[in-house]
Length: 127
Image (cartoon, rainbow, N blue to C red):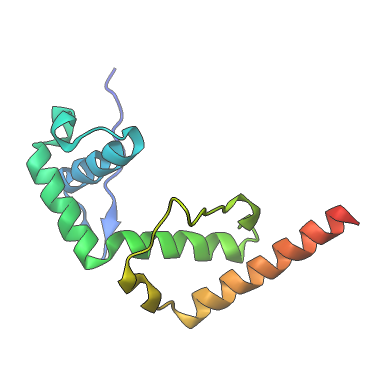
């Protein structure tokens, strides 16, 4: 009996090579475990190659696009729970360039609508 492998991911230009999938999973491993790049298991490829790919994706805005897309989809389904968001400014500092963040108007509208709905739901719970 043979093990079934996951189907290839289909991108704009066709199936993603298995190598890219492993590298992406290596990046996820790094941030899920909190381990050092040099501690990365060999199954993801050479740690330096995965780190370089991460830097390319970071610089290209891939992770921001993934996060914004996930938030927008969750907001459309009403699954954004902003009560779980807690940022303490005494321990979290934003880079001075963070003041000029730009969001797609539709994404911003979805997030504002989700925040309003969450606030209404919270107020109903207190009444």
